[in-house]
Length: 69
Image 1 (cartoon, helix red, strand yellow):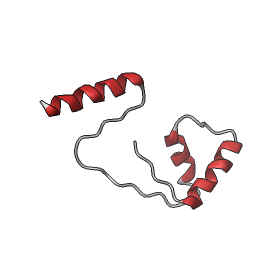
Image 2: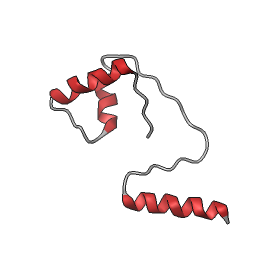
Image 3: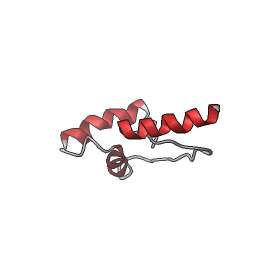
Image 4: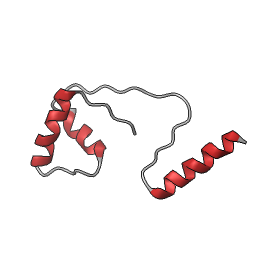
């Protein structure tokens, strides 16, 4: 996923973490946030590669290299 937060929303991140909420999963912050502020989404069209580990980075690298051939 790709997240964009305004400076106002970023200031709430401290509140979220101070309450003992999960710092490791960004989606949990969105789940917490939508009860406090309006949240909007935007769908990106086309190929999407979610890179969250070394293995998924290597997989993305293989996919992108295949486009050069």
